[in-house]
Length: 328
Ligand SMILES: NC(=O)c1ccc[n+]([C@@H]2O[C@H](COP(=O)([O-])OP(=O)(O)OC[C@H]3O[C@@H](n4cnc5c(N)ncnc54)[C@H](O)[C@@H]3O)[C@@H](O)[C@H]2O)c1
Image 1 (cartoon, rainbow, N blue to C red):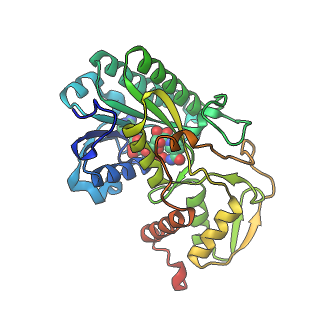
Image 2: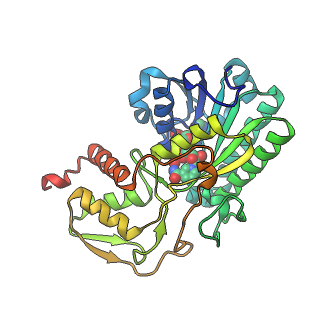
């Protein structure tokens, strides 16, 4: 094991990525492989896919596993690793509202059982847990910092917060080296939902008119997926890992209008914008994140908003056959 010291040499490090075939997980696996780490992925392909790992297929160990069925203590005793990135989850709010028991079992109970195995094993490695901005609920403070109140308003948010709280208590009581990363909305290649993908799908369907929810002035933080993945590595390598949580965002403010116009510039389309006018209930006007804690351990977003959108548009075109700039 190499994880005893504060810094990590990734080329001498083994990593387990649960949910590594998913959107953020697959980008994390690519970065880990590029850094020289030995990587194992556990994934059930519930929402992820083998295709997401095509670029690293020969370089990793990929195990199709439903982590709800896993005896973590036995698995980890037989397959020791230096760092665990725990991302496997129901990753979205709506399924947690429709099926709260399912969300609780996968996102909370299974995660708790992982922590319990680490306690029993007196595990010497490091763990980074993928939490979410959903732990804040309708936060009233802008920008949102980690010390703001956590008042989740969805079963998904409650499950993530409960797991975070156990992580913090276990880290301190049992001397386990763990931290949580609170991802804000990420975008990028391989994501087939959320606002960037939705706008691209609409642009692909109709080149003349683009429907936008609200009035376009809603402010959001757009986190490029590769930066999200990199942040998890920086936390694993540089953070104290005493149970603390880190906001992960781009730390920049853009309106939905700015996003839509940027996508039009990149695709070469000039649709008229149709606004619904009213914001959707529960949709905050402004969602901005303070990432100074993450910055303090060495994180800097590397990919600009425009670069991230350009890569996303190129990926979208490659998987859908959209050929905007070629005059389709
Ligand atoms: N994408 C975001 O903007 C965002 C925001 C906040 C938090 N998060 C968190 O980050 C993590 C990754 O999210 P994502 O956007 O990549 O989602 P995703 O759905 O693409 O990835 C989740 C992965 O977990 C796998 N999985 C699901 N159930 C499993 C099971 N029972 N056993 C094994 N594998 C299972 C899926 O197949 C998938 O590959 C999640 O924990 C999510 O809650 C994501």
